[in-house]
Length: 56
Image 1: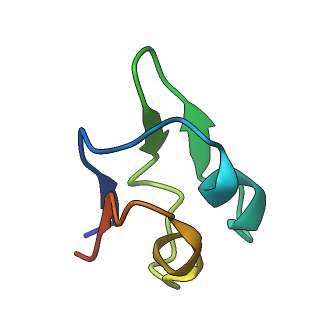
Image 2: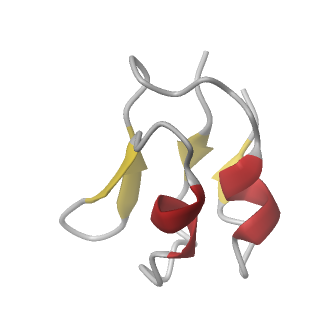
């Protein structure tokens, strides 16, 4: 299972720049994580200023 981003996301983009495999992209209303590309490293969750990224 991959990390997920909930609706608390403020679309700041901090997570996308941190992902080592570029699994995060900007969606319509928030950033999204591709479950096929996520390697579950947790780097994105560590930099999210609002805690919107949830561990699998």
